[in-house]
Image (cartoon, rainbow, N blue to C red; front, side, top):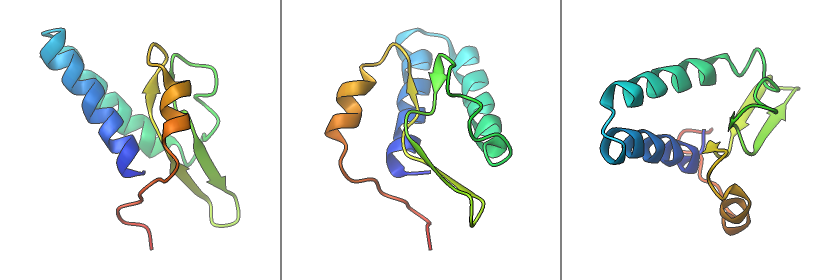
Length: 94
């Protein structure tokens, strides 16, 4: 996962927790996102038509890797965000 995708998750969880005053929903979302990210290696195209979409990922079949670039909710102006993001940062990629 890129630093940008990690920030997307924390921004969304913070929004639900603080702005919507719903810490239980924020925690549930955080847990579910982590679970789904762990499963992406098995089903990398699973989220192509969902409201919570992995907007931008790279699948490397040769090395059996999935690189998550961004995680954006469908209500976010993700077209603008993706155009603004030209460089992605991978914190622990070797």
